[in-house]
Image (cartoon, rainbow, N blue to C red; front, side):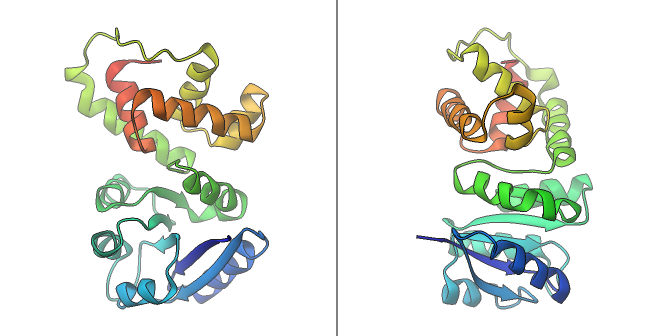
Amino acid sequence: MPLRIAIFDDNNNIRDSIGLLLRTEKEFEVVGSFPHVLDCVADIKACRPDIVLMDIEMPGMTGIEAVRTLKKEYPEVLIMMQTVFEDDDRVFDSICAGASGYILKNFLNTRLIDSIKELQFGGSPMSPSIARKVMMKMQQVTEQMRPAGNTNYQLTPREKEVLACVVNGLSYKMVADALHISYETVRSHIKKIYEKLHVASLTELVHKTMKERIV
């Protein structure tokens, strides 16, 4: 079954371009394309997507407000923010609202397809600069409360290498290139790392890794 995707963006050209890009993947199906989020609950009910691509700056109601609303009604729907902004407030407000990923619009052509696949298989894709901001914020929050790094999660040497790459902001594809392994192998390692560390998102993964000094 194809992955059902809905797009919310007030820029018609960007919305159409994203739709065209997604339709190049046979396993994706664009089930909705909307210029605002004022009727987002009804729109999601009508098209039933698996993943929502959400612009932050929308007329009448922001994308962040829409995420909060949608996660209350449809907690199972995965939402990835796509925006030109990377300031800290928007990043963390989006994550706290319930977004599962955050991609900058200048990365859409090169990273959107891979990011959606990461999201589909349990990851929390972020543009490298965004992941770095999350990591630095978590480091600030936990700096004074770090315990000694004695917990043994039985990570293999390769899993530690993959974890270090991800925590430092590399995408799955970038990790594969850096470690000279396949994209699917990276996904397999990440799945095992999530299981061993008992986390469910990139934010949790980064927080736990930094707090406990796992790598």
